[in-house]
Every structure is written in C-alpha cells, then in structure tokens.
Image 1 (tube, one colour):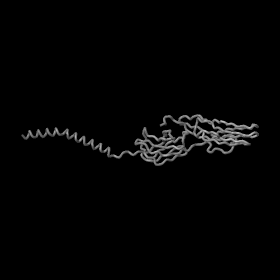
Image 2 (cartoon, rainbow, N blue to C red):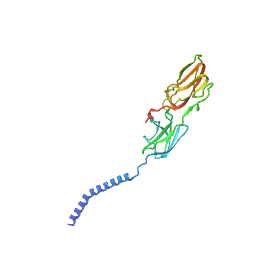
Image 3 (cartoon, one colour):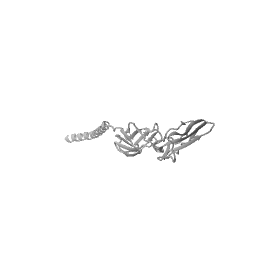
Image 4 (cartoon, rainbow, N blue to C red):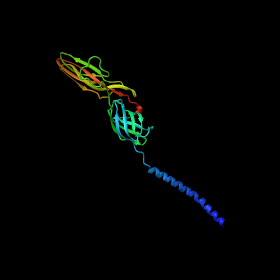
Length: 246
C-alpha cells in the first residue's frame, strides 16, 4: 500500500513539473519586459552652445550626442537647403565639424542627428571670406588686389548721351569640396563727372556663380563728361557635394 502511494505521489510530481516550469518561464519573461519598460529611455541629443571659427570649423557643445554611427550627422539648414556637414571629431558632449560657405544664406540653423533622435536647432553665422576684405571707395590704380574685379567706362560725346552698361560678373561653378570666388558686392567710383550722373541700377545677390550682370545707368548733358570704375568684391565659396544633400 505504501509503495502504491509513493508511486502516485511521484506521478503527480512529474505531471506538475512542466506546469511549474512554464509558470517560471512566463514569470521571467514578464519580469524582463517590466524591466525594459521601467528602464529610463535614452535622452535625445541637446545642443547648448555653438562657436564658429574663422577657419570654417564649428564647435558644437551639448549632451547626448553619443558615439558616431552610420545615421549620425550634423545637419545645416541654409534657409531650406539641408546639408550634412563633415565632422572632424564626435564625442558625447562635443562635436567639431566643417561649416562651409555654399554661396547661400550666412545665417544657418544646426541640428544633431544621433542614435537616440534629433536635437534642438541652434543658430550659427558663417564668417565669409571676402576678397578684398573691404570694397575700395576710391579709384584703384595699377593692378587690382587679389580677388577684386575692375571695370571702366567713359563718355565724352559733345551732344550728350545716356545709356545702361552691363558688366559680366559670372564665375565658374566650383566642384564638390573645391573653392572659387563669386560675386559679393559692387561699388561705383566716378573718375570724371561734368554735368553727368551714374548709378548702379541692378546687381545680383551675394554668393551667386551664374549671376545676372551688374548694370550701371548713366547720362550726361551736352559738353558733359563721364568716366567711372565699377569695383566688384568677391566671396570665397565651396562647391556642393551631392552626397551631403539632405
């Protein structure tokens, strides 16, 4: 009788074992899932400060940038044109990147894309490289300084006259990552003015490569004389790389 009871108890234990194991596995899975939801989510990156240097490097300070990854990037918004910057260093709290002048807006907004999300946007102002640094206000004699364009015009018709002169300021577009000089600003210097007037009537926007010409409207009375120099200051820009467009 005792042997029969032992056999029945053993059978019950064997039948109960799979159920107990299943219960334990379910409990462990539940605890693991609970731990996942209870763990704090990784914070999205945050930019706290930006410093733009004269050499085109931008230092970005903040938190949550993490480590470099395939989808990680610093995105610059040039007024609707999005461009991924080349990074020089990437750490959890600091990033150094190259902020190029693409011939577009100088005021840009930067965001950081990391593994955990997208950061807030912070304003940065590009420091343009201008040649020459200042546009001359007086006539330029001899060979113009590096980057300066000079155009001249004169009229001495005894009967007087009027017209509009066009001066071509188009530059060849730069290749990816290469630099070139493009139009930035124009100034008019009157060399001789007798019963005469002249003014810049049309000028393209700063940063253009395929620009419309600068136009100068002029007139002078009979026996009048007019001669001028049109001086053009240029801006150094970098060619756009298609792979960096966003």
